[in-house]
Image (cartoon, rainbow, N blue to C red; front, side, top):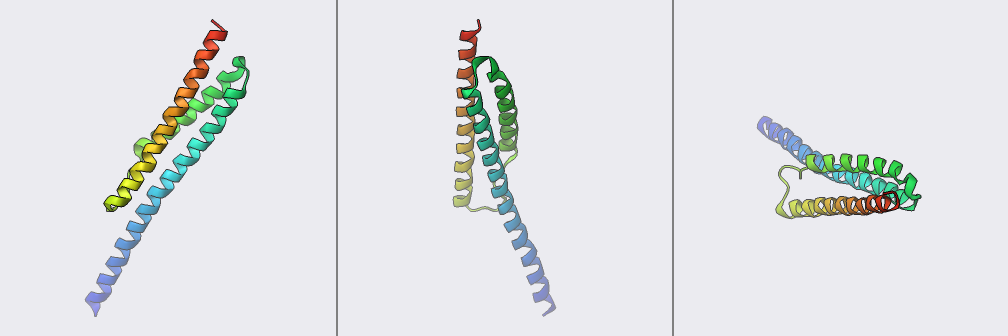
Length: 119
């Protein structure tokens, strides 16, 4: 009976740490998605701003993308995830990277347009 109690205790610790790790990975992805959405909003402001004022928004946007990419580099799927969960995590991660690259391309176009207006 004493051994059973110890096994149950150890099992509950292992289960809770696995659940914590999985939700931690999900929370990381959710945080990165929020960063992406905020960066998108700032980029839209830059796109709507007059050419001479875009740089303020673009500077803020680049700072946000830098933070987002840093978080993406740190993030990893939770240890012990199944192959299917790992694949789902990788798909979300890849989508976030693609979104960040898309935003960078849009910002680059704005910078090039500003250069054409102000040679």
